[in-house]
Amino acid sequence: MFHSIQVDLSRSGCPENSLSKKDCSLVDDLQQAHQQVCSLDLELMASGEIPDDRKPLDGNFYPLPDKILSEYRTDRTESELGQILKTANRLQSSVEAIVVLGIGGSYMGTRALMDACCEPYYNELSKTERGGRPQLYFAGNHLDNDALQGVLGRLRAVTPEGNWGIIVISKSGETLETAVAFRTLLDLLKQQCPHDFPNFVIPITGETGSLNQMAAELGCANVFRVPEGVGGRFSLFSAVGLLPAATIGLDVVQLLQGAADMNETFRTAELSSNPPLDFALAAYQLQLQGDVSIRVLSVWEQAFASLGMWYDQLLSESLGKDGQGMTPITMVNTRDLHSRAQQHQAGRNDKWIVNLSTRQSHTDQLQIRETTSDVAGLNDLAGVTLAELSAAARQGTNRALCDVQRPTADIVLERGDEYGLGQFFQMMMLATVVEGKLLGVNPYGQPGVEAYKKHMRNILLSDRS
Image (cartoon, rainbow, N blue to C red; front, top):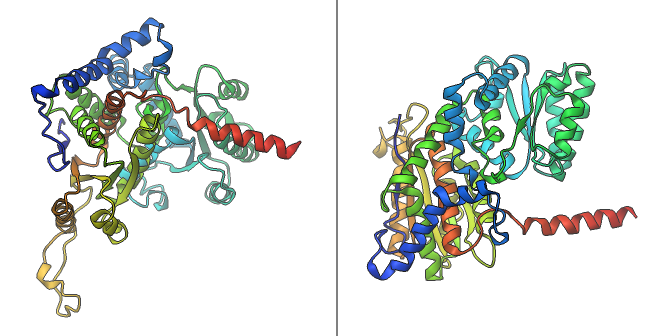
C-alpha cells in the first residue's frame, strides 16, 4: 500500500536541501542528529547510563511502530496489539459510548485521527450507521464545568442503563484535569452500573502511580501501559492512541504501517528525498536567518483542524526552550483566508506557512452545477469540483505569498486515511526531534509546564487554609 508523502520546500526561502562544502559543519550536525535518533539515543537508553544533561531521553517513540507490528505479526492473540484489538472488539459489542479521559498527548492524537478518518458527524449517526461502533467523547482535558456537565448529560441521555465506558489515560494518574474528570465520571458509572463497571473502565497508565493503584483496587478487566521512554506527545502509536482508534473501527495496523514506512524512509533515504530530515533542515535554516518566529500549519481539509492542535503541542513543548523554537499556529482553509490572510500577506514577515493537503477525498466529489438563474455568476465554473476550487485557492495563496517573499511549503498526503496519517504523524515527530537537536535544545520533556502547576497548587492550598 506504500504511497509517499510529498514535501515541497522550494518556496521556503532557504538554500536548496543539498548542502555545499561550506556548510560542512551543518552537514555534520545533521548527520549526528540523524544517527542519534536512529541508534545512539536508543543505545544510551538501553545502557541505563544517561548523562544528566541528556535527560529526559524519550527516544523509544522511534522504533515503537515497528516493534508493535512485529510482535503482532508473530502472535496475533497475545501481543499487545492483539490484546488492544480484543479489548476494542469487546467494547464495540457492549457499550454505546466511550469517553476518553486525558490531556495533551493523551488525547490530541486520537482526536486528530477521529476527525480525519471518521464521518464528520460521527457521533450523530445511529449505531447502525456507525457500523455498530460506539460514540466517542473526550473529557479530562480542561477544567470547564459546563463542558464536563455537557458530557455527563449526554451519557445520561444516550446510555441511561450505564452501557458506556471510560478509557482513562495518564502515566501517573495525578494530572489534575484528568483525575477530576475520572472521579466525576466514575461516580456516574458506578451509579448506573454498580456491579459490572470495572469491565468498562480501561486505564492506560504507568507501572506505578495512583492510576495504576486505582486500577488494581477497582479490579479493571484490562489495563494497558504507557511505554517507558516515550513522552506523552510522542505516544500515539502505543495503546494511548491505538485502543481508542480501534474502538471506533479505525485500521490501526495500517496506521502503524504508515509510521513504520516513514521510519524506513528516515533510516535509508538521502537528503532531498528524506521528508523528516528535509523538513527539519528547512525549519532550522529559517530560524538561523533570524526573522521567522511563527510556524503556521495551514490545513486545507476541515477534518485536519485537530491535526493542527496535535502539532501545536508537539512543536511548543519540544522546542520552546532556552529562548528557542517557533511559535505554532494552525490555520483552517479556506475559512481562515477570510480572517488571517491579510496579516500573512501584508503584516510582519515573520511566518513560515506550511500547507497540509490531500490528493484524494474520502467521498465523491461535488461539482458546481449550471442553473438558469445565475445571480452568483457561477455558471462559468460549471463542472468544477470543490477539490479543484480548493486546489486553485491553495495555489493562488502560495503565489500571492511568493510575490511578497513570504516563505511557504507544501506537505501533500495521497489520502487522509490511517496509512497516510501514520506517515504524517511519524514524519513530524522525527522532524521535530531532529530540529531540536540542530537547535541545541532537548526535544523531550516540558519543564516549563510545571511552573503554572506549582503556583496553582499554592493558590488552592492558600485559599483553603
